[in-house]
Image 1 (cartoon, helix red, strand yellow):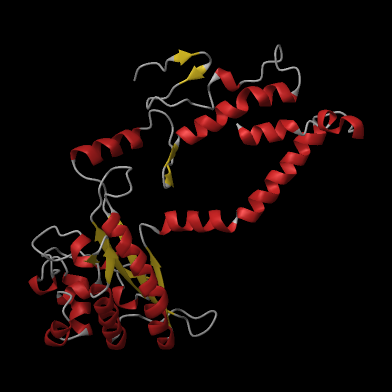
Image 2 (image 1 turned 30 degrees about the horizontal axis):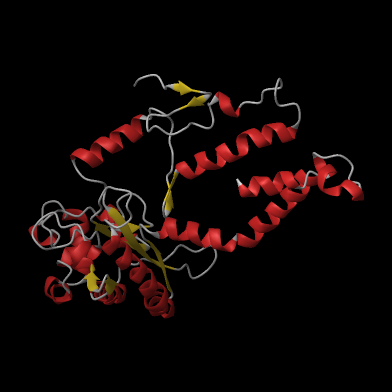
Length: 322
């Protein structure tokens, strides 16, 4: 990588943006910065501009170190192959009967049938995106033919409840736990062997039948880019998926003494937005405290005839206007 170029105290990263942390412009210079006011006045407007430059509309870019091998490899992978798929996930788990007891096995006939009911609701879920209805089948990863690469214990029955009875129910699933790579009837609907370790949780060693959780993972197609519109269908479906879980699926499993956890690719961004909205009052109070601190702490003892001058009240005010 070429050495970063310097221009009037600014150091630029490989993306052409000002690196605030190592640019000499932002260093304290006691020869010209005689008081705090001088330093703040010098950097404030420039700092605000640089922060805005690093912000992408609708989201924040998460930075890694300059020259990061992981970042370079991800860019290469996204450009030459495709971005890693989006992940939507459900975890259906049993609850211990007492505080010190082990959670009972999730692998029962009743829980299998409940999982089929949950899957049916997910399959029939539709979300509106720009006037068109989007379902999981429209956005899911399909490595072969038309079947989604859903990672679920139901794949041992080709995601088909009729085959659950035809294949022998729970006994067939337990058989597939041990023969998932060799038995043809244990292959998934998308014709790949399914390791039970990826669809079960809460077991030790290879005791899959003792698992206390079903893990259902929905890989969804992803597209590179920062425009925010390329994955619009997926995001719309994810929002509907979260509502479905909260409003229908959780109330469905709780009477069965089960818990249902969930996540979606949009969950992190949604949580950041929720936290941002919830912290508005805190941020406002913080700004008021900083305003008062700069006004009085860095100024002279306030005197009423010259209050606006001695209190430096115009310093924080000008900071907000920059």
